[in-house]
Amino acid sequence: MGLKLGEDVPDFTAESTEGKLSLYEFLGASWGIIFSHPGAFTPVCTTELGEVAKLKEEFDKRNVKVIGLTTDKLPQIIDWVKDINETQGCTVNFPIVADSDYAISSMYGMIHPKASTTFTVRSLYIIAPNKEVKLKITYPASLGRNFNEIIRALDGLQLNAEHGVATPANWKQGDDVIVMPTTTTEDAINKFPKGVNVVKPYLRYTPQPE
Ligand code: BEZ
Image (cartoon, rainbow, N blue to C red; front, side, top):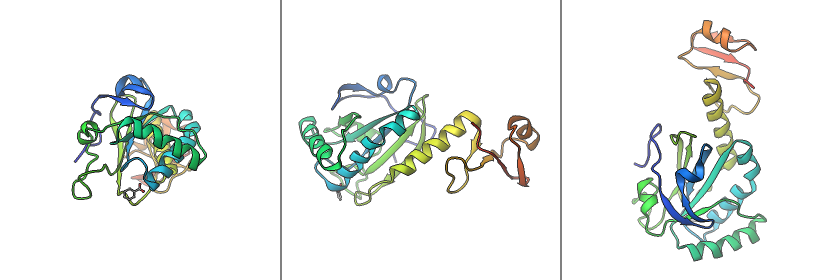
């Protein structure tokens, strides 16, 4: 269901809180995040959108553009944004797409009919600059997402894209990373001047590349 890793996200044009938005044009050469949630004027969603607004500096540092998606009509979303700003102590600083005909959410697999036929679940896609889906998560309506984990995932994905390394369980910034199974130890030693720690032939660490 929905888009799969490695697929290109479909382009679309839609109304948003920042005017008409065309996905590919909006993203340009940046990384992207598109995330859905059940609807306007709902409590968990209010906290999620506030949290995303507060993390803008972190997204900017990583060259990531964020888009929210709501299946309400634009005037309602605009009214709701006032509440988000008031209650979450933020200024919503990313576009929220109004997908009131469910065209985008259907295309992106954000409706899970056994959960609800009327609202989108909490779907989130991380999109690489080449428009490829790099990560997808799906949470139910009752469970707010941990956006610090999304930032951590972005860091891991960007390390993989830039340096061809993998990240171990619970990896965090500054921890050692893992040499990909597709890299020979000889190549790894040449590629990673900070050194390679061979624990097993298949389990090799190197300090996080800069
Ligand atoms: C919420 O965003 O708070 C929510 C929406 C639908 C069901 C449960 C919670």
